[in-house]
Image (cartoon, rainbow, N blue to C red; front, top):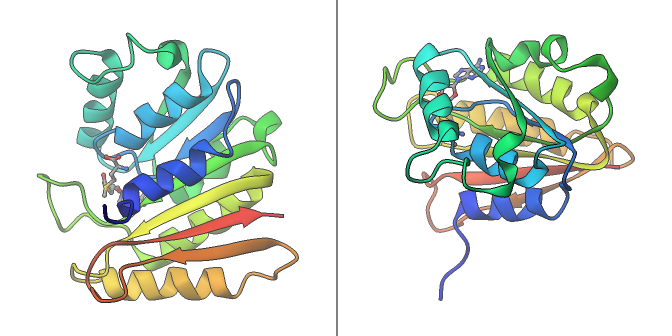
Length: 197
Ligand SMILES: C[S@@+](CC[C@H](N)C(=O)[O-])C[C@H]1O[C@@H](n2cnc3c(N)ncnc32)[C@H](O)[C@@H]1O
């Protein structure tokens, strides 16, 4: 049968904690898979903030949301307010509505580069850690931050290690952190998930 993929596990953990009407964040929208997933979860009364530093990623996400095969227009979540933000996730707090601060249900990070685009444009440890701090402040108690890490590309292992250390150093009174990883495959993507207390 096999275990859930890292991406499916991230979706499962988020789905268990997000309800219609919630505000959620996609910190790295890329191809828009997670943005669409989040839009469907929160539905027409919800809001999704999706960030990327590449205009191409925002275009791909917009196209995925707009419909066609796999779009959301035929799904209950089609009307969710999706804010596509062309900015670094390090600036998340500046773009999320003040009334949602401390109330967001989830923030998803999928690090690394945009497949099929310039692979030198990647997330970096400093920016990612700043964004993770901001995301954890934005989510509500019981809310979740998921981070998919890619130790297999140049710079990815250092970033993954930094994120893991960041998660491990969180006080247990602030958050609980778990790791989901194929222990026989050192270079395979893996997941760190943080639930805020
Ligand atoms: C692996 S892709 C994300 C995949 C996406 N979650 C999906 O579902 O298709 C990583 C994305 O992070 C973006 N990125 C890199 N640095 C960033 C930053 N500082 N802030 C926001 N996005 C960033 C890249 O442009 C790329 O599109």
